[in-house]
Length: 526
Image (cartoon, rainbow, N blue to C red; front, side):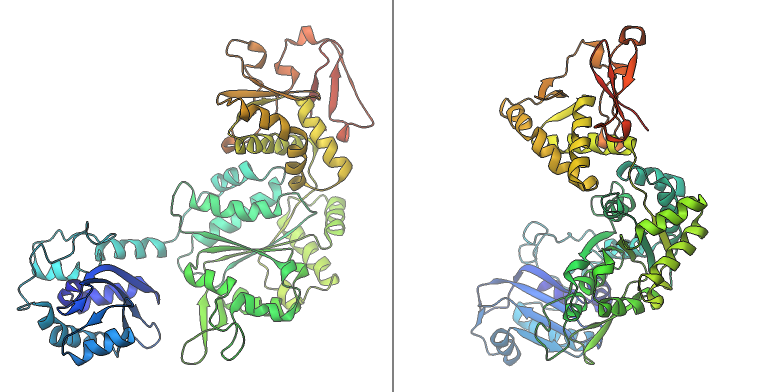
């Protein structure tokens, strides 16, 4: 408790700013004389509404002294104060004498004051000034101030760099990614935005809409281990009923579930810089959409809470709301194709708004959408690239480092997905079905070096040859820098391959060719 006694009003104000309504826990604090045990955990909380302070103590601490306030504290587990001045008065008048603190200018000996070693997470005092020592006794105020300032600062991103980073994860949707990069870079550069960034992505299933929402967070955080942006995915097929509103913003007082938390409001209250993916928004109940309208327009989300008036507002102006849907996607794609307007954001906006109104989406919701993205069906080259990437990622789950995938393998996976239907997310299941046994055998043999996957069926995993020029350039590049599949054009000299003929019929989108001489297959763009 010495940290509390020696702190002044300024240090408590700094602590109040860093808490943001949450409770801070102090471990292994020295208790007053007469307490058993002699050390316990202390909780400190300041209400952001009225400034009242609660000082909590670990359950099970007993006190044999005569102080009435301490007897009440250990009996009830919490003491409440009207403000910082009331807390300081109690600390100096009631607690200090019991802690053996003689005067304001004297501090306990090094053996009595908990250090960074005895109190995990505490920053040791580096200053020789008594005032500075008291200010830093509870927390590292300089670090808190620096972090708060950094979190409030705008983020300046180059639009082209943002597009390139998104293109690593999302393949074949360049027009939409250019629009997205422009919108995101403009929003994060604002120090005081009026409303969240709202984006509506339309396209068939399995073309990269969900992946885009997740990639935004990864790109914005970059290489930071504790990035300032967080990601929340809400599957709207779980919100078909009206009562599911409470799952997003909490239940009002007196109703079942009050105080149990809410997915959307809790995430935004914890971190206003959150990218929220509303997946398949057309499946949500209309009451869910009404709840979101005020947040999309005014940047505030009114929720049920525990404050005096029974409600609270969550600031979501720095958030990104990403809606995905396949509603009316075929008619939207057809209209854009007829006008050759995929690269024209104004035409995309006009067509999307018109078709969504026709489909029954409330006009007031459509009017609050800032940007529309249209995702096309994947072409053969994009399918090959995605498949190669997912083969490598699946192999990595077995501890395998895939450097080359034979075109036969890629084509067989694409054909299996085409026969069974589904978008890019189905590829992972087909990869497991076709290559799972091969990966298991390779993992059992503990192949830790680079390997290649060869076909046709039965497939095999073999170590990459160190001195074989056949596969020197035919590799699947790392996922971090994009993935490409190189076919026999890199496996042999053009004069040795002979002529090739296209194989029609079962090949997906006529992307398969067979060499007369080598019998190997290649993956080409249509």
